[in-house]
Amino acid sequence: MKRGYHHGNLRQALVDAALRLIAEQGPTGFTLSEAAKAADVTPAAVYRHFAGRDDLIAEVARQGYDIFAALMEFAYNAGKPTALAAFEATGRAYLAFARKYPGHYMAMFESGLNLQAHPGLAEVAQKARAVLEQAAEQLSQHLPANKRPPATMFSAHIWALSHGVVELYMRGAPGAKSPFPPEDLLETGIGIYLRGLGLLPPDA
Image (tube, rainbow, N blue to C red; front, side, top):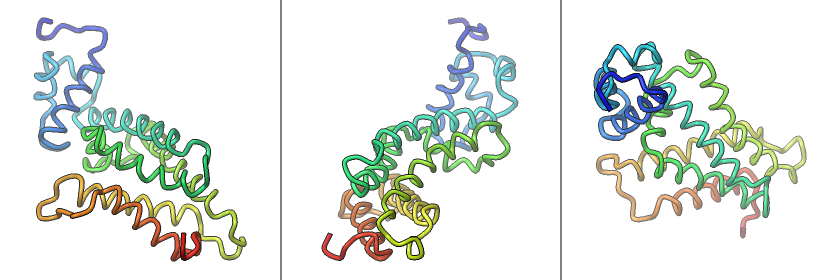
């Protein structure tokens, strides 16, 4: 392909180039000109599709949230085979996504993007959160309404726990090596937390 050629899939070519750069240098470690060079087009061609680097990273993040939401929905599997198994599966899906899609993950969670500043980004991000909230809601149905913790609250806690395991023990944070696999850390952490909320019997 000749440099500067405006091919039909230039927008996605730029996204793919940005993904490679993000994985190598982080979401703030490259310029729009570098993304253009990686996609083998002129910098001027980039501006036909993206207003700036943040706009390009936002599209990477949007596509990432689409994949993420689909993985979460697949893991949740409409609450089957049990509410607990489905809930735990969504936590494992979080780790699997971070491991398999590092460029998307960094664009979504490490770029400092303001979700509200990019049309459609906040909406697709909420799709993924909604799956975990639905799983949390189902898991707490057996409790009396006056003793039931808000699903949005404890799903947010599990999201934070999952994110912490990823950042500390999967993303290679200096000095943060665990003798346990990330999945084991998350599963035991979720179990302890749910027992504390009264969502699991003590011997479960």
